[in-house]
Image (cartoon, rainbow, N blue to C red):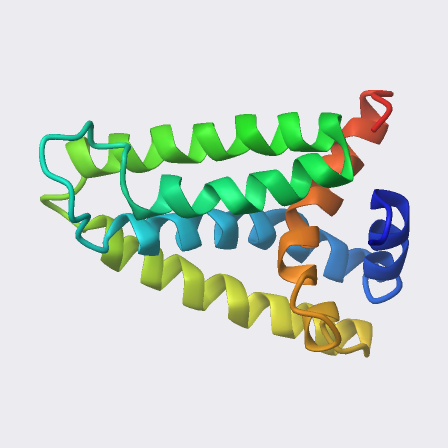
Length: 156
């Protein structure tokens, strides 16, 4: 298994252009949130559970285990980020669903964010990393988290 440093270096190869980086800093977290939102929208078979117990939180567990296997600090950061996204989705469902459901909001943001991601890679002139290895879909959020960690001088 690759180390967190190896994953980040390999991911960084196709993310050198400043415009592409900026697009990724905005769109990768948005896509992460929308994937959780899409999963959130699938009916959960167990009744009488808190709203946050659903497919998004159940299926986030293997992703978080992957992050923790790379680095405890990255796993912890991604667990906090995931929890914040779950809180946001619950807030949306309770306060905004009469205007736009979690599902519709997630689909709209997902499509727009992916279009922008491909625009960024067109500007970069390099294919997205996930076309080489699907695991890079999980590395993108960690790459952004590690960028923040570096700015805060947190070792990961």
